[in-house]
Picture 1 (cartoon, rainbow over the protein chains, first blue to last red):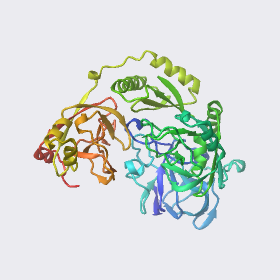
Picture 2 (picture 1 turned 135 degrees about the horizontal axis):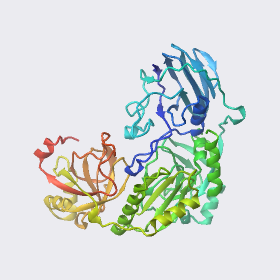
Picture 3 (picture 1 turned 30 degrees about the vertical axis):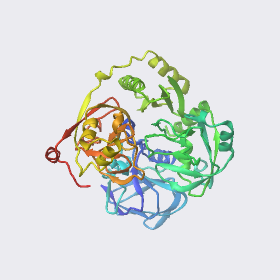
Picture 4 (picture 1 turned 90 degrees about the horizontal axis):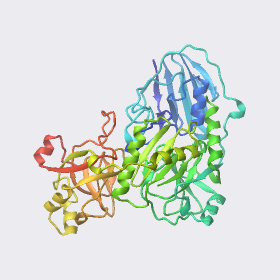
Length: 303
Length: 227
């Protein structure tokens, strides 16, 4: 039982929360860019939070169901149809045989998520379904979803009617403030440079993908030219020689030799993943105690 | 040893500010100890030249607690003898068809190509870090006689299995990739093998010895000469 992919869109990948414990071999974590949208979809379907999901980055996806199940679409605001009838996102829908699910234009945000009850039945590779094309790992044979792919799922008749609370629906604006923990090589940035970093506004450049988001704005200078290569966590902010911050995301390289001023609170990176090129980014400092509390609160919402 | 904040759920342990064999052995010993705990709350343990990054479950440890835990654990770290580490033999065909930079390295060092090969294949190298590509192990130290800096403009494609040097480091390309290292030869040794449960036969604890093999032997092992 499966969805037949009539139109795969330009960049649709199968993801889950990521591939862990192979980073020491240079294998990146990968995984969904927006965990908020992902976990919300799984929660609405009463799925396991580690189930897989489709991450849709460009419009024009069309799937045909060949068995009963329930689906949920979250993330970016988009045109969404079932058999040409417009539907709303962040809400569950029962699907029957031959139904056609269509994702049209993406209106606000960048990434749409499509979850199916109990996830797609695709074998995991090294503990995960997350697709990392440069490693040929995950997804269906290590690449993005293609036209005529089959996305298998188990038939499910359980009645699920759920929608995400209106007041918790995210809004995707053109401005975002990211909370930053000063860390790593922060000592190599003078208080003047740090002040500049926290008081300037930056623009999201077209160099923005699953690996990283490169910003443009007031250059920040480190007293270090480079560092001995070391492991890079999700959200790390690298400052290369040109002083333009690079925020490292889910498919980042595992080690790197640029100085880092700190790291963006992970849950703010999920918001960043929905920002369009040209959006404005600002930074504000957060302390580790508050940051850990925010992170715990975030995940507790879904448990 | 210093434990520093990396991100909301990660800390990084620095063993030294400089790359050395001594520091590398500390990193390897600490890495081995951390792995041996088999603690699910330590989600990622990523060693590099002078550091180890640890991503932990913040529902189990807060920042203060993980620092205390690691400090205590590593306080009396017993540094292992390098001879206790496994040596892996890697067969290499050092031929002009595959070793595109053999001549360049020889010319720069003012020695013969045969001497370059002999020098490169006579040492046991330590793995200092793994990254850049899955299974790409940074090994050192290459004998100073053949130390050669990276190409000024990187090649668009370095074939999988190429054995190369850059400065005092040597490595094997685990897959086709752009790169600026000087290519000396080629191997059929798989660094990123999806059929292995461990995904790679090499870890930071491995030591590598390159063995020169003939063209016939290389071809017999399934080697490909073409670029």
